[in-house]
Image 1 (tube, rainbow, N blue to C red):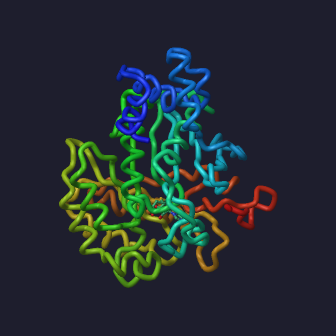
Image 2 (cartoon, helix red, strand yellow):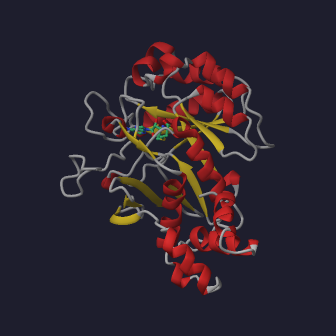
Length: 345
Ligand code: SAH
């Protein structure tokens, strides 16, 4: 429930608006699900609420720790389905990578999540709940971490619920994450980008590009057939940016397919004068046939070709690949064999 919806519910039992605020802060700020423990709320209010409502966060079913310190969580939801989220410690801060859908409908050919197809959308509570649970697990203070919608799913295909979760997460009475610390990554759902452009506040935007011609992008990312490059970049140029804000372009480097010099030059031309930074992601193993990672040396030349054209660019460090938690690897794999997807139902 949003804070407003929660306030309506509480107002049926209490004439004190701050009771709703306290409840909201217990649930989201402190990850408390037990009404009995919410000691600053009147006993009678807690009893009435307990008769009619349950508070449920996703339940941690499995934790897998990477050698590099990342931890992948398998979270069980109320209907028995499951979703994955990843804790990624970095030198100066932590990043939490969360999912917006179970599975994904977009069918990008290099991505393992795509193999699951779309199982279902996540609710705002299930999206914000991933953050609440991971923050509690790692004792993270709000604003001690960045949040990225880069887990399973296409966030802009679950627009309303993702935005509702964004409002839950940024609410100062709850977790209170700063909007600028939240990045939403899309495969290029142009109507969603246009809608997002009208939101205030809104998360920062990252767009997964991975190809610089429509022919190649049509092949890797079928969404491009609906929203080709020209339309995608037109929508990015219309996005009102905050001072110093940049759009991130993610680019999965696939050996011999999209990692040549001319790709870098086309990418620079597409970028034009847009305030953006390019994040190069060497392909992560997905047991999908036909792809290999661009060797680091070639990835560096690709980056340097962009830098020469005055495009800000960096190579994303691979994290959690040994537990299948790196980009494109979230697919609820069997922890024993790390191969066959486990049942999500
Ligand atoms: N659907 C959204 C959110 C997922 S973000 C989107 O596409 O942006 C996941 C990121 O991982 C995307 O940038 C995607 O292109 C990238 N990715 C997918 N498969 C990958 C793989 N095998 N190796 C490296 N990156 C991959």
